[in-house]
Length: 442
Length: 174
Image (cartoon, rainbow over all chains, first blue to last red; front, side):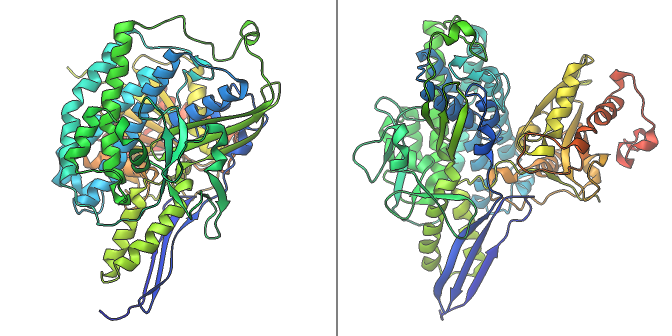
């Protein structure tokens, strides 16, 4: 194999605004340039919540993303509660965990079946699968609809939850709704097993690059909703309010999106990071799936992020059943509901002190941070939002810088596909709110 | 026999954080003020493509209201069916957000979902980050509501067939 020149520029311009380009430049067999360029309009969410009441910002932030609406909503209400020193009930927390499970399952499923499975089955997109693997497509759609139905039961509607507010829930599920949710989850076991069977046959590229992995961690459970921030490079987790000790945001030259790093050049968040930190907290069913899929920690293969997502779907399914069973046995306290806005009487119960609050949750793509500074009238004066995809950007670049030189003997098409698969493994959310229907009439 | 036979769903798609992209949800807000015939439901939100797919099998008719870049003058309203537009080859597999309305309509067509889908596209003026919708697009809301009502017989309004695109005219439907 002689020394070669190679230029790859994968442009994704179908988005009206906000898209990612992969740029690879090899000269005489030497990698000159290799990066994921994010061309995206600066985000204004932080400005949008400024001067608004702490008790309404979740309605705005939940619209940052149509896929992670619950995640943003939860990070938002947690930051609000932290800012005013409000502690929600255990019941409210458990129901929040349940809703977050539903969203994580929903998003993981979409990614695994519609974006990664086509690569594994050797087709360019999900469309040809309708002819060759119709049962697979229908199963994915069936599972997806059931996750949406579960979200609707819990939050009033699937996208943009309405019953989730600072201080708790405006509505909690009835016994009949709990039974309905349990029955949906139990009916999914067969589809879940079939999903695991598909991913058993999936061949992922051999690639390893050890990096720093970042996720919430909790002493008693596999952390999604609460915990402290842990990384594989530190000995002791840091409190959510000290998140900036780990999440160092900066602007990279080739991208308009914020990047993040800790002490190394990059870190990774997401399902793989969570498993590398919290594997022992998985339930037994999920550990069974991990074994069936040949997943072992520590895992340094980024492509395994999708496998990690499938493992998490199993964990969330069975943990959801556990939470529902808890309420079916112990009962639900129906007096534990709140109004959308605190009334005058309720306000006497807590004092809003000016200060800063931080809410961190693990959403499908990783650690999501919302931080609000409020005045004594509970008006947001300042906000910061660290989005998982942005935190992963530097890690994508460094992965590519290792992956491409290792595969220089491959054809341009193979290298292009490999780099696309790498980016897809992160399940990136390139632009959360750009989805204008682009119409060309026939 | 067919319990979903007469069900109609009107979905307003878009993000209210993106100026005129919020026209879909705002039209639904407007519809929510008035009475709706039985079997007519409304839904709104920043729905990702795949989240729309689940509605198709449960309804006889789905009307999607969305800001659409049709390369027309801002404020232009067009009523069309998926057959009128170029489908997507689903090539943008970069992000789950790449699975948009266009991809969903293409997939629904492949899956032979038996549901009559009508899209009301409104050419936006400005989709920058802004909680406000532009005056021009706001002024179109009553017209869009009227248009929707004419598409649903239960509202008792009629629309001249010639005003519809070819694929939506009654005689061109099998």
